[in-house]
Figure (tube, rainbow, N blue to C red):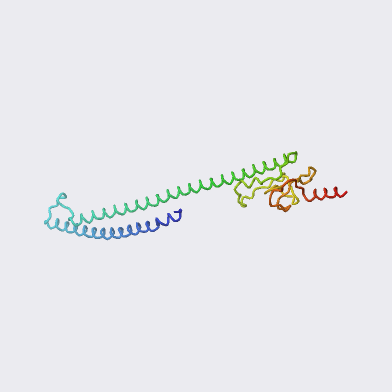
Length: 229
């Protein structure tokens, strides 16, 4: 499950709204009990005052106390306050847990981003290495011992996305009638004096490796003219 789906499944706003609604109800209940207790205590204090003045109650502070109902209301107010505090702490813990989980997702996304950057950089390095190796092989073949055909080194490498926009080396040699760099399958002209030397299969109409010696159209025409003389 993805980050957004995970958070939607946990319904953080709904859980917080539930806690806040319960706290609001408790607060209303607390205010009602508190007002009732204040009125009761005021009435009892007035009764005690009149009793002392009339002599019905002995003015002894150790014997004067609120009724059990008044004391129970006060205890009830304390219990409601404790419940409100517990709900507030629970809401805080819920938000804190989601923040910690968000931090974990952010760290994971950062790791994935770095892995993708490293993979893209490694792919670019492999491509540059293969291009360098390919250029070196072509240079070696021009000095002698030329091979009949050669495969594009990039064929062994996973194709790189065009979005990378890899820079083209202006010093890389070009070949064939199309005057492009080496790519795909190529064939070498067997004329040692051929000015072009290497040709792309597609540019010379080849689909497979030629058998025996092979000459480009320029060199083949020159040989025919020489034989005609």
